Length: 185
Image (tube, rainbow, N blue to C red; front, side, top):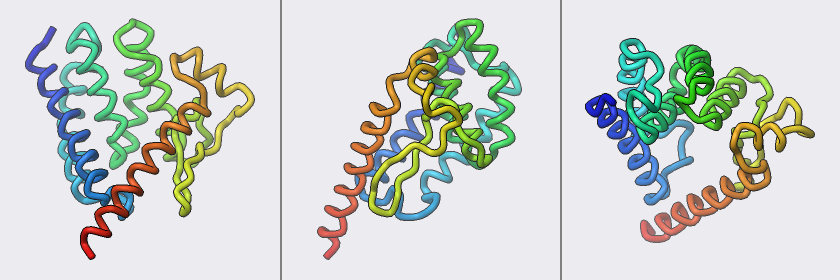
């Protein structure tokens, strides 16, 4: 295992998640299209993950351990500034899943993210939108009748469970935003 690379990936994930949580806590997540604080983190992480993948290929479990392999996926999942790069990672991640070097659910999330960002229906129902009233709903799904079976095969819970989890998170974000606005007055 490459412990140095493992530490780099975990550090990237930690910064991403810490910044995201800070924006949630202060009620700023979702107040602008792409918050500058998280965009800055994503730009820095995008540059570094491209270097890592260019040098090592997909950083799988045997190279960096399970936690850091998940961190690599998260960083690529958040590489929304470069969808061409995200799409190029799909083939690498597919092979990593086949070799047991990555989780199938990571592939599902990245596949759906790439599809929805290009205006196509998703397969696994991992990507959601929040409407102006704060209601979470899945973006269009290619085969809604089979989506729960597909999700189960790849290691995910039901679409209803995912939507409920996303709704709970959105409700917390809105509560924090409201509380912070009340404090500012």
